[in-house]
Length: 201
Image (cartoon, rainbow, N blue to C red; front, side, top):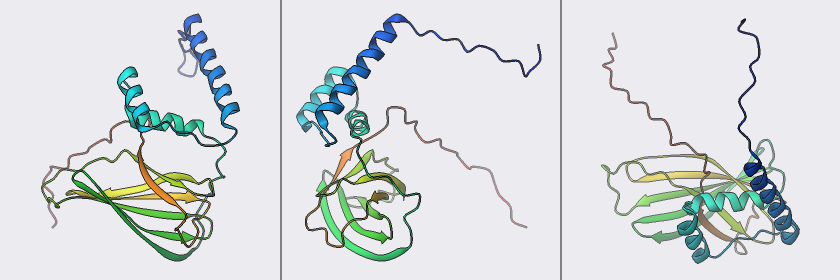
């Protein structure tokens, strides 16, 4: 048999699986009809109850519910030219960590919002932590928000979020929050250990 010949991929799809999928699609259609384009999230206590009952982590439940809230503005291919920097400076302390919304880079088409997270007090020997958090912004607009990058170590990290449409230049009427958020298909980052001696001649 030549290497280019195609093999049929085994498919174990069953009638039982089909019934579950049909139920999911029916429920999805009903939810969209009820929502009428508005965003809906359950209370924290409800999320905790569901997490315990179904054995699904709260960040993964939030990821699923957020994906059901459609009617978001189209995310531009690029934020456009940087026009100015807008200070935000909102801080909240939860447990041993301080969370600060520092500023937004106001681009032509969208904003890039910066969040700093620091262990209190800073511990240089503290290993890295992996925030499973999504920025949520409530206001008169419906904002689409995607994580844009992160960096850090030693008990502190910085996360950036791309927000569209662009934030107004005064954020007094906006409510910012970080909510637990993680894809159930998310794989832990692959770690590469560099432990070979390197000589520079």
